Length: 163
Image 1 (cartoon, rainbow, N blue to C red):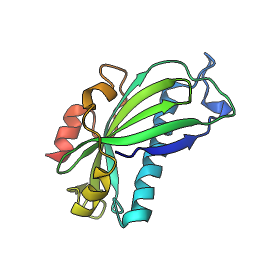
Image 2: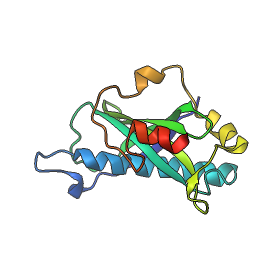
Image 3: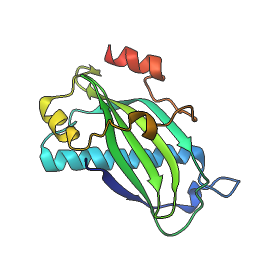
C-alpha cells in the first residue's frame, strides 16, 4: 500500500493566542494534502475526480500541540474505506519525531453539472486501490476526537448524500 506524502509549510498566522497551530487550521492543512493527493492522481492516471467532489465529514484527533517552525510537517494520506459513492481518506500530520494529529475525511464524488453525488468510476477505484489500507481502519482513524463537519452535516449528512 502506498501513501501520498505532502510537505505542508507552517505560516506564522496559523498560530493562535496559545502559541500553537489553531485547530481549525488543521482542516486547511488536510484540504491542501487531499487536493494535492487527488490532483496528482488525476494528472498521473487520467481524469480521476475531474468532475468534482464534496466533503461529507471530517474527524480529527489532536494528539499534541504543533508550534510554528520553518520546517514543514509531512501529511501522509491514504484510503481506508471505499464504497460505491464515497471514500474515506485518512491522514497523519507528523514529522520525524512525532505525530501531531490523526484525521479522516469522507469524500463523495460529485457531478457538478447535475448537482448531485455520483458513483466512483472503475478507473478511479483502480487508482485509489493502490493507496488503500483497510487493515487498520479502526486503529488509524480517529475515534471520539473533535470533529468539524463539512457540507454534508456529519454522519447523517454523509448518509443522505450517498443514499
